[in-house]
Image (cartoon, rainbow, N blue to C red; front, side, top):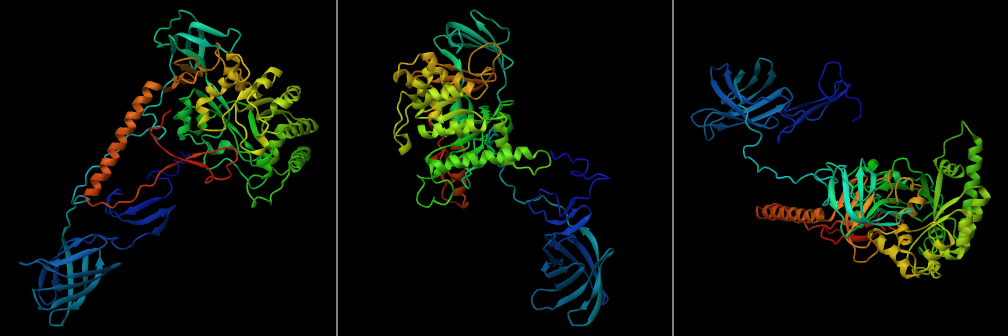
Length: 617
């Protein structure tokens, strides 16, 4: 993995002398590491027991006595005994190559041989005192080494391991799903294109792309899915999400943190990826929070459940960054302790923007040889139309301010997100070329949203602003189809236009509408098969397909729930069994799921929800 196997990794001539010296097999229960050699340099870990002296010895003294002694115990802590009719236990002390022996010759107080000497290549030798305290010399020759035994005299019960899943959570795959040739037959197909809704229509998926759309299609070897009475739509795209992010969404220490990258902290094990697939979501735009005027760089992902962090990322997509306005930025709703960081007013927010882009212009003019500044690099990308802004916003006056600031410095606002007062400035947004990604009906949760109305999305769309509905919430993202449907109630929006607010329109805002967001030949096969009308509160996603791979199947989900219950029962049974055998116990600690929102400042400042593998999708 490190691409240095030509130098290390095995014992071979010419490679670095990196190796261990141990008392036995490296994975043995009682194995001791004696030495660790690094590039030919010896580091002693434990000297005791380095030489295994265990075995049977023939001991000869100059006074004519001959004895057989046996050294047993462990290599690091040997024990000695005299082999006679009755085995007599003595004492042995090893210090490097020095040995001391105290050997009884009979039971009771019959005196002892007290010997000391050295351990040599040919045996042991030294001097001492016999049982009458007369000086003697002695030698000991090894007659029989100690017979090797198994690592543990008592065989342990084989450990029963559970299966490995990808990702390693309850709903993980035992085998990653594969791309298939899929033929969906006789569905109502919501194309999001000029063809509109097509009744009793087939869609063929091949190579991860939409290959054909029509009636009575056939394909040899294809997996056929009966769509009779069901509805097929493009996958839902969440323009504003905070799922699949590790350890927090805000870098709140300063007001300009454009060097921060969500791409560095993508968490592919977040179960919300799977849960949102169950709600028909196929792509999510992972945003930095709203603690800063200029926040961090975002990351667009496809919900490829089971893939690693890099494989989740939407390859080749344009790069975005999070800006923010309002109460979160000036910290007016974060308590009295948050009064030290600039800015503290809405006027200060404008000044932060002006200062940042002035610095970015000057930085760009320095040209080659300048010291690299990752914060300003991102701002220069904005000025050069290589990075695009999605801005947390609420109040009309601030939206106007940012539009004017953008005009002043020559950049564009790609998307105003939240934008609950978008209905007041929709004409100016359209003139500027900005889109809006809003909530369907959130309002009155803080002062700057008091003027929010449920007709906001409808009004922006009618003015000609590209309008999307986003979640900013891991739970609501599973019901974005229902959030889109609310604009049919509030303002009598056309059904197809409502669906586009969570499919094609966010694709346009994220610059990926040429690849996804509608059902069109050549586009990515990011699809959802619904059991009923996709905008109904009663409908459920039966299958969610990303790149021609079925990542969510409701029937398979039932099997996964059964598997989770069986695994839980197995583990509980094992714990109860060990408890009966006297194994130590401890109180259970619940696992807490981190659900982030825009304003969360740190990993601990989250909405904690106890994980429950039985939670309804």
